[in-house]
Length: 352
Ligand code: NAD
Image (cartoon, rainbow, N blue to C red; front, top):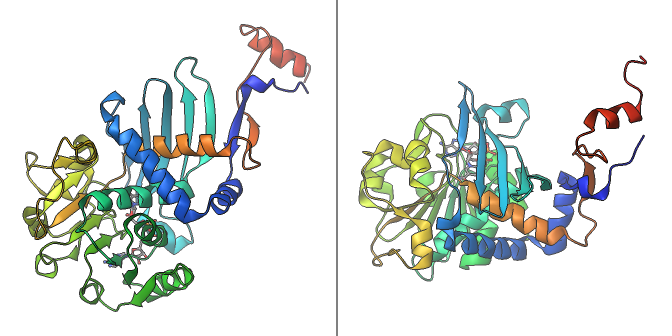
């Protein structure tokens, strides 16, 4: 067999290597550095090609492609969301993604993104909270204790300085798992038996549940003045977590309105209900929290630029490490027009 030339080998980051890289960097430091990388890209928001993600819905879930480009690099993520998967022992969310050069279209990175999505979602939540949550926030209620939850807690600790999390899930075994996993994080962990108990004394409320329906994880009377709500589980048409009355009381911040109006909590509101784009808060073009009594809501659905930032971050961090393998992904004939010849030299075509 002919060996591919180096220019056609694509760095590939497997799940195993991603875990190695996270441990090498340290999760809290990685979350902090990735949040900075996302913030840098949000500051140059107008430079990006932006489109709502391309979603293929079924009765049981969704498969989505999330592309964007900054003119030099192009990135996309493939991601699914299947709330019923857990019952079959499968992940609700799995993902992989790619980064490519715009000038010649050649991929420069192929990576697992199931872990990376949890990390980038947590970094984005904490970045939003750093700009929107009441100052001095020390306690977060974490409602929904599945795959994303520990990452959310550790990001809020590393980036916003929270010291206490109050956990609740309809499935007590999920809460026990999260409490166990957070045991060595340095966070004070309280296991709660209702959402009402979880939000007691919390300045930040994160909802991260998975259910393909208009769910009501929080009702209006549960939410007091001045809290910051980080709603990440409602991210699909027909899938929300908050009662609409909460939305009417809150200042709402979103990633990309064209996508969030279809997928976020605000799908429950008229299409012209005012929202603020998070990138404008970050650049100072728009106001974040107006006063201590305001309820702020980050209606997160996950946007392609966050994945682009995460892929860019990984590409920079794996250089010179053992945490990738070169992948023979691209055909690379010596004569670019002689693709057939390359095939024939590997084994003469037509000889059986
Ligand atoms: P998961 O299936 O691992 O966990 C979801 C948890 O929610 C489960 O433990 C389940 O028992 C719990 N739950 C369901 N209904 C509940 C209720 N009424 N009250 C309390 N808990 C309840 O899923 P995951 O990977 O943690 O993802 C959670 C959600 O976040 C999914 O809907 C996913 O699509 C979404 N998500 C959003 C982003 C984003 O960028 N906004 C990124 C990743 C995942």
